Amino acid sequence: MSEAQHPSLVVDGLTTAFRVEGRWYDAIRDVSFSVAKNETLALVGESGCGKSITALSIMGLVPKANGRITAGRVLLDGRDLVPLDETEMEKIRGNAISMIFQEPMTSLNPVLPIGFQVAEALRYHTALAGEAARARALALLEHVKIPSAARRFDDYPHQFSGGMRQRVMIAIALACSPQIILADEPTTALDVTIQAQVLALLAELKSETGMAMIFITHNLGVVASIADRVAVMYAGDLIEIAPVEELFEHPMHPYTEALLSSIPRVDRDAGDLKPIAGQVPPITAMPSGCRYADRCPLRVPRCTKMPPLVALAVDPKHRVRCWVRAAEESANA
Amino acid sequence: MSAVAAASARGAWAHLASGIRRHKMASFGAGIVVLVALSALLAPWLAPHDPLEQDVLLRLAQPTADFPLGHDSFGRDILSRILWGGRVSLYVSTLAVLIAIIVGGALGILAGYIGGLFDRIVMAAMDVLLSFPTLVMGLLVVAMLGPTVGNLILAITLTAVAPFARIARAPTLAVKERDFVEAGRALGFSNLRLMVVHILPNVVDDILVMAALWLATAIRTEASLSFIGLGVRPPTATWGGMIREGFENILDSPWLAIFPSLAILVVMFGLNMLGDGLRDTSDPRLRHE
Image (cartoon, rainbow over the protein chains, first blue to last red):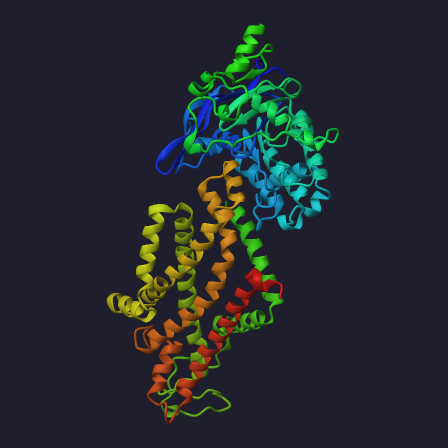
């Protein structure tokens, strides 16, 4: 499961900028991580931290009118996707990399039968056509456990519940047996019980097919139940990446620590919840140094001057982007 | 792609058909339209006499059992001429509206989807077309290019393209922002596929409602142009032409003009009922009432 053995997808120094009132600002900055086959990497962070921008950048779906990837590489089996043109990317999207969206209620076309929508991806990316595509689409719907899939094949999205629709979305994403699946908050819009079912289904499908999964969420409970490794993002920076138990037990970045201590827990008094003081800086006024510096209790003068590099902790799988903690670690080591 | 388009069209038709069935006014209008269309299609078998056969002795003859709608100023059977005239009127207006739907719908969806400068140029061109009153546009085209069936169709098409482009563009602007289009993009679908397979079926309802109303307008325009002598050349029967011929004898033999006028009235009535009904059924605010 080590990322060094079979990195399926490598994101290296990815920087994506957006234009706000005529000026370009980095929405994500120097983001690097990799995902191996049969591995789930959770990308966590609060709203607006750049999780979805990272996903869109990997897919090559950054809106061209006011956004662009300014630096970095996205390597799929060693092939850089960033310089590819639209036609080449169309062959990769939905085929080698596919995406599951947050809103199952609106991500399906309301006027097309669901079976058709599953078969469409197959017809488009594979040699399957006609009855063969239909048969495979039906098999996929059965695979994601849609009850009486054959009878419901020609039903329309509005005839399905949210959880069932998300299963249809998963079937569509899986249609072409992708190497990587990008799940952008796939359970956020669902009931808790349905969430658990969908998470179990995703985990099962992942281990069956051996695909890599990047799971975007802001729900740390979901992270604990599905992820192998976790990457934490803050204000466009990837600040810490570690195996899931390691991150929960030994968070190193002060933001990760603060994030973990702000989760309500049944076994603790609600008074123990610690909100993080201050706010995320707006994209138009990002500090040049550490973007968390303003809110950070450990701040030293160097933090506000230079952006911290990714430092290795004791464990080489655990990396953190913090001057203070990196210095502590190297002192200990 | 054709199988794909067929599947999406099937969905839209099924939706519309069930809408019409549930709506009394729409089904009544649809019934009238189907009857008129059938009578025009089957004119060669239904018409009791040759529409061009003249009989000087029966000039302006009153309706009789054999000739229920009477004779015109050349002694031709008016019933047969109305049936045959319906063929020309419906053929010209249906073809014109069909071309307008395809051209206008494609332009509207493209303009809405692509946006930016392309959108502005296309819509400015449509505004120019819209600024011509239908009859003036008809006069211009037919006077410049000559009164042939083809030019008549061209004239009516030109007046109808702009409204269809507008009616297709507006929902495209809304639909292209919806999640399923983004999801389609994430599945690697090309822009063409997104427009044809995913946006078109969401827009087609609005277009078809307009189609019924514009078919009525097209029939009226064709009749108007024929009435002022710019339509299909005599002796071919058209409703507008028949009214004009009958107009000269409106006081002593009113049936010459009245019966073709009634034919137009009935079709317009049917199409407007159908169009209004379709609009009701495709308007979600009215759908549940």
